[in-house]
Length: 92
Image (tube, rainbow, N blue to C red; front, side, top):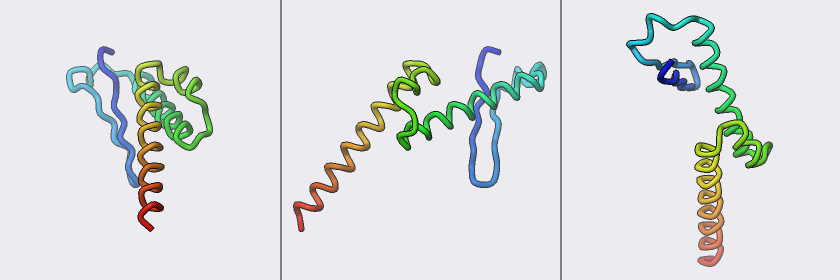
């Protein structure tokens, strides 16, 4: 499979997205494997954001490129929240 299957999860449904040209040749096991992999990645990101797993574990689960961008985004978000709280407290 040259492209990965995309998974979008909303409150009411799970949507699978995959290349049209490969639809006819996908085996059910392949679809199941890709969906489970995507769900594992989503769970890892959620657990990292909640502080349940370390950055090192996230890198192991997602690979370095994707994990490092998530780690950096979390760091920037935390710094922004702290700065906003400090600015608010200073204005009181």
